[in-house]
Image (tube, rainbow, N blue to C red):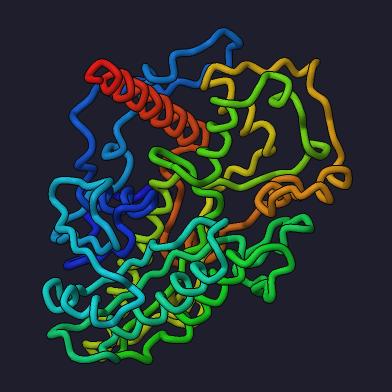
Length: 407
């Protein structure tokens, strides 16, 4: 069911870790009731897949604030290693290293957060030592500081929500069909370390539930995040290909093309994080008041939840839709199919092997226990990503042109 737009989400003082990154920016924006948006008319989203070149920059969509519930009594703070990008008016920014308790404590003393939402993570292709340091050691340190293990910071964090990944149950080699939260974590991972580090971090978070000053914890597992300002994920990879690949390359298809794949619009992920935090705060209040807490099949604390757009589609349909919106039309009668067995030994990326095998996850926990539902559809989410990429591309070209004129 859709959320009651008349009932605001109340989170108190929130510290969003990694709030200058792709996902973090959208969490901040949503908690600020979409500070990035102006009052706009509500045209229908562009859905054309015509073969003539569209103007992606002119596509218009309903405002995000018209779809998501409002936030009230929510004070937004951001912690990031560097806060020189993706800033929004209304948030307070703090620089710090989540791997260093002495860097975190001054921020916690100043903010005194009731909720911590961790969105920080290196990209999947980062060196192993960076993935371990940030995803595992950094998450552990952040948990300990939030829970008071490194010293009193003058407040109490009631809710800690961690961003994991739906890939923690996928080996990137076999089809993942209707997987839900009951599936085991894949460790050690046979293909790449990013997913293994995310699984280790998730386990640390869930095991910490109620162990640090009675702080409640949970994890949200988004699948294939897409949307505006993506600079290292699925939509960015597809759009970089559209921008630079020759025509013949766009007409190669890896595998048979019958692999269903789950994506999640970034605003829906932010919403999933928000209602998870709201549920933890509700349980924390009941514990403090000595009231009955949720039963095992109802509770959110100590649990992990898959979040998707609940719209699995064929991966190559996603790719061709994005390429067409960008202006690179695909002629299906010219598509060449290459087998997975032919390409994987050549050194295909682990992420591409995921797309070839398919990943169709199944939401059960958060949709039932928190009332989550995806509020922006997949088609619009992809179109928003294309528009954002094209506008950024044009801005960069204009900036380069201006520099040349100055020279």
